[in-house]
Amino acid sequence: MGIRRGLLLLLALITLALPARAKDELVLGMNTAPGAMNPSLNSMLATSLVNYMTLRPITAYDANWKLVCIMCTELPTVDNGRARIVDLPDGKKGMEIDVELKPFTWGDGTPVTARDFAFAVEVGKHPLSGVPSGEEFRRIVKFEVKDDRHFTVTVDRVTFDYNSIERMPLPAHIEKPIFDANPAEYRNKSAYDTQPTNPGLAFGPYRIVELVPGNRIVLEQNPTWAGPKPAFKRLLIKIFENSAALEANLLSGNVDYILGESGLSFDQAIAFEKRHKDKYNVVYKPSLTYSHIDTKLDNPLLADLRVRRALLMAIDRKAISDKLFDGKQPVADGDVNPLDPMYSPAARRYAYDPAAAKTLLDEAGFGEIKNGVRQDAKGTRLSLELAFASGNRINEQIAQVIQSQLRQVGIELRLKAAPARIYFDALQKRNFEALALYGWITRPQNVPRTTLHSEEIPTAQNGWSGQNYPGYANPAMDKALDAAERELDVDKRRALFAEILRLYADELPVLPLYFRIDAFVIPKPLKGVRPTGHQNSSTLWIEQWRWEE
Image (cartoon, rainbow, N blue to C red; front, side, top):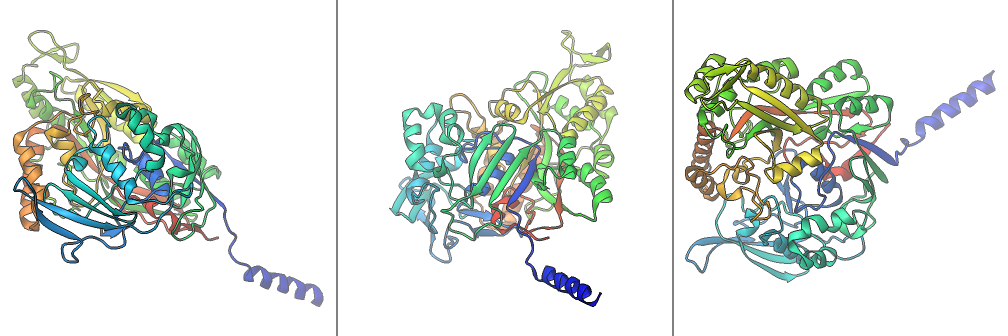
């Protein structure tokens, strides 16, 4: 018996001395399928989550909302001389910004150079390329390649966020011949979508080795990655465009971790935490994402401001938050979160007031009700279509609640769901009938130019560049947006943000719903995941993730 006890003790000591078991593969779940994988053509959070695993921007905001270098060796500032205010030939002031790149190598062994950024700028400036935010490229008046790792960019204005350079390079040795052949077709021909497993498309810690649209993405370690070696040899991303299926696969062990930025809904996370808090850490991260409804302003039914105001006043947003989110997702009165330093509480707020909504609809000429639906003197029914991405249980529930609430004031709401890839492609081309429900995520102190400026309305003529999907055009808003970008004084800039919020609330090109709190359901062995609460999501630091059992 003594010998047996001794052997058992020895085995126990050996077991304690063994290192934690390595986990070679991490299986991730997402609730939205990525769209176009080219980083210059992307406007979807789901795509960014993947791009951050394979690529890197020059700068980004970290989890503390501090701007940091990612690809650059030092953040360019006026104080360190890497950024300078200069006189432009037209007599205006602009800025020169020097960037020194850290050494990176594309997965096929080709060095990442300043010429890859020069090519990305060429794509962005072309009027037919269809980049979602073409304005930031159009303001570049000169891009000078000094050598492989140094370039200077000159922009046509002085802005407070001049050193926030979140653009990613494009591999010119692969993409430029495709672009040069037909810029107007580049969106459909990019190697990122036609050859997604080409190793030369990645220089981050991982590269894509398999992509089945709408189903799965497989990534493996990139041998040319210059940073810290990631802990996982392989990442398998499974897409479940259904929130219930996502949770079921997590519980069954088919998924290790659901990406918090594109994962369980808030109500799911609350219920999940109560049942499984012994195995998971649930982190609730307030974010700069706000859920809203775009209104298509060239729809005659929505052109009248009184109708848009009536719509918002007929939606009980607090009841939606209380019922679906346990009251923890705050009602939004605009697109700037109170957590943002530029927030102003001075703008108009709309309380739930169905009686006032009915009065506004009467004044707008929709006073007659037939079969429960309002109509005008010509018999035009106040019937609107609400489009949204399918598979997300919260979106479906919100749409149904709003449909019921609007019915109470005589507005018919027809629901139209489509898979996320199809829905967002249609949105980019303003191919929706009346209303579109979705969420925007942004960065701290972001001027909402791309969504509210008249020059950002996507059209066939500009290659569908811009994200002003409502088609909102107001010279006063344009002036406030332009001035806010150029204002270096924080207090004066905050006053301009207040004007932006005032105009937004007065005219309602967009109906704000609530600010989102992202729920990160993290298995206890998974370490290193740091929710950020803004558009530079947690996967940008995927090489810091590890599994410790």
